[in-house]
Image (cartoon, rainbow, N blue to C red; front, side, top):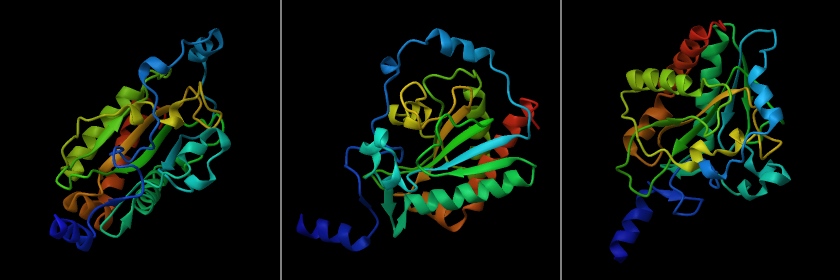
Length: 247
């Protein structure tokens, strides 16, 4: 037993700043679908909303970035720094990938906002993607997963997820991890009915777990070849915007 513990500590492969029961890179406390209140009459009117004039716009949130600065309504997430493994932190991996996605999209004439953990109140974009990396106490667990919000007034989030999944699997060759959690679908940035610092209800959104930082193979791709996941996600976003005739 002592030898096993020493080997784990010496390897530096796996450790977490968050509770062991939280095995996803997304912040905890995601809402269940049943927790979401019924739509109000005002919210129903949002479905008749018209996109404002202007170039295509994409928001890329760097998961956990500056989480200590989250507002009072999200103070319970302030100490959630995400996964760490192999000498890398989830935040730095998320930020590099988000920046590189932005470069891909800028070449297509798309305006990009790189956002921290705190989402501007009522933030609107054609697409909002929360970028995370996953973690597990089982270092053999590998793969990526992408989820849409429980509530999607745009009725386009599932199509966005399909485009992202297709491009990501084709380019990275990672398998899809089917274990979508409430922390993903109930992600705080999607909860416009609950928080001021959340996306506008007519923003098409998804959250991406780009791979397991705690898995050696996934980590090698995320840290040594971040252009690959970035190009894949950028391609998926562009495909979605083209299908919607936004570009």
